[in-house]
Image (cartoon, rainbow, N blue to C red; front, side, top):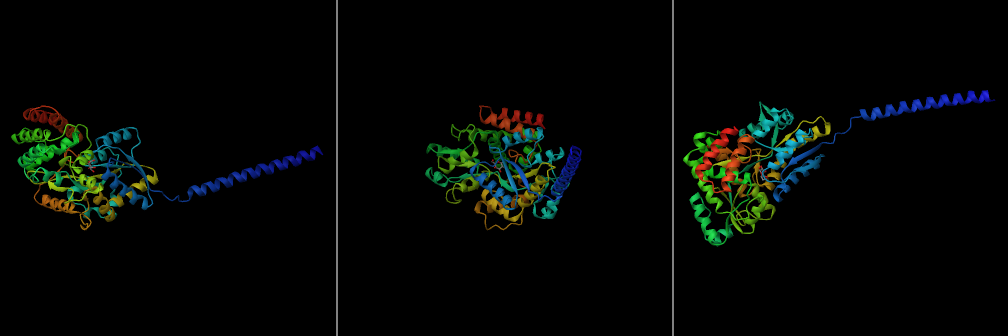
Length: 434
Ligand code: GAL
């Protein structure tokens, strides 16, 4: 009996083993077939940007909605701090840690720098399919390409040299919108006497750098601007015109309130909105802030050219895509690049952001009087060669040179430094940095 039992047990054991082996094999086949089935890609991007103010975040939200409506998964990585210096620091640390975001708000020479390090995915496939060569102005195409390859998708064209005015505050002091710096200074004195802050300002290097470049354009004109802030010509940097620029910066220092140090640009915009201040010199992301707060152009605020010689200081935001070998992230990057230069997004986003579209074949009827003025002025500036790249907003020079400008300008603004000393320090600092 026991013999038979033993035989039966061994037979059962063998069939158990066979069953187990078969089950394992079947599971393997199933798993294999599941893995082999083309998993539906879920386009995903982690996006590093610095659009965190009221107007900026509304515009960034429009991009996110567009992306998610197209089936994408958006992982938001905002870094607060106007002008983007804080965001640049976070980007560098993320790349050093081997964990770059998928899509990053970046612009100007930084694009070519990161491309040269082999970190960026090229966007040629999307650019060809969407005909970017035909819809972008050459000035913008040159910024987002390197050696014939697209490394960034441009989102907009911002103008830096705008003067924003609260008409009610100006009326209270009986002053008109100034067209020259002498008129600006005279109006500012009257505003001060009327107890109104003439110039709303945030004391941060990029904001002082933007004031500086506006004065360089206003007093010296586009050719002088290019010589000094783009070509870094020592004669221009040490010229009498540059001394006059710092003289005017000293006057502007006298027209801001005591609370300006460290103030964010959008907080200064609040002073303009509530009439505490009468004017603010800022790029047209300011308009995005004002309209997000329900203010109307021509009624609650007026957009005017910064005093002095005419020109257009260009600042264009783009997104670069850091290389990723993850299929979902790569799919997300392609989808985002396609959407950003699509007509629908170019309208929705730029109306909210205060900028004008990067693509040139757009209808104008959704854009307000300030945006239309910007479109017309840009065309005119390209035609008479008075369109210049913004140094303060990282469009004109490498980061180290921009840093040299900002260091000297902001230390002059926040000290008793003479114009002649500032000019000398500027020429030396720029020469060392380039
Ligand atoms: C600029 C940027 C704009 C705007 C501004 C304030 O550098 O290009 O999009 O947001 O900073 O943060």
